[in-house]
Length: 115
Image 1 (tube, one colour):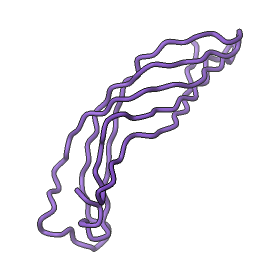
Image 2: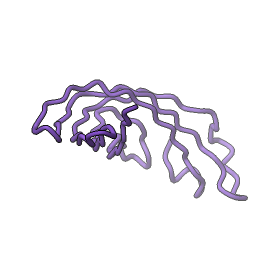
Image 3: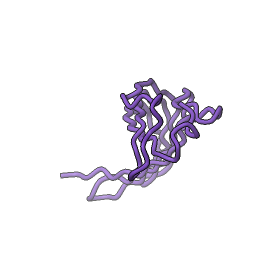
């Protein structure tokens, strides 16, 4: 769905993915992580404020598949857990907006806690 057809309204996107990766210790405190991810994407057009959507725009969810590569660093926080910084490089087309192919490009920051 080309964005320009939305008449200045929003195109919301919901994305969920599951990484599958391995890690290589670089030091006692830092690991390099790399692998792949699989995910699902849901796109939906929504009216912004009082602007109505054009009549020919479908407002149902458009579901799609996403996959790509993931790599990053993991830092050992000793007693607390791990801090992870990963980059997701999408290989699948998740949206075609104004004749531009859009793929996932995302930087994730995560914290794992030990109990």
